[in-house]
Image 1 (cartoon, one colour):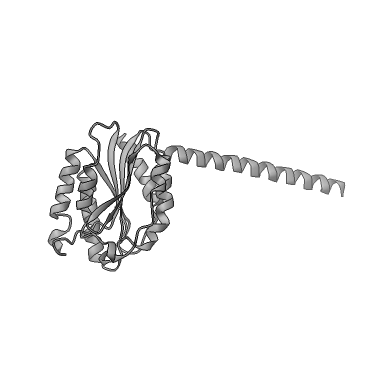
Image 2: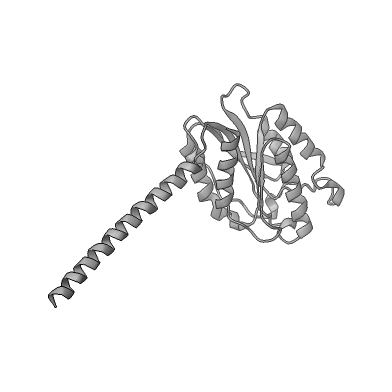
Length: 239
């Protein structure tokens, strides 16, 4: 009986010690992951969100705010929404990262807010960058990428007039455009061809301005968690 009791106490202490070591290792692993995930240098970034994206995008506002708050000191952030025919600037460029994060709102997720294409507003946002500001310049465009301002056909995918203008303007101002694909409540939410055209356009505007496009599949919605991880890695590679 005495031996059994000592053995039981020994096993309980061992289990507690193992649990503590596991907790420390887990915390160290999380700390390491967070350290690797941070953007290394200050950046001037405009975050543009298309207002007619599907309602699931509202669930990603929190992780988007976390990304803004995680940027290094000295970064400048603008937050804007691409809505019917205009760019709604919720937060002009600021170094107040918490304020920029708080300016995010849930997209309207209605065809009433649908732009003909996002690239006119991208051009408008590009013109708000301060040429004298220190650090790298970037746009994060959250959009379905589809431009139907001059019709919807195979020849227009990735080669529309406004997309070409956005690429030229971004390169002239030394701004890299990164993009997250998300379907809108209109065509791209149910038409695979439209989704393909939109992704093709995002891929081109990002690749030709020194950025990168992030998307996975033509149907459904993928959360932005992995996109932000890859975005940080891409920004650090440039740094």
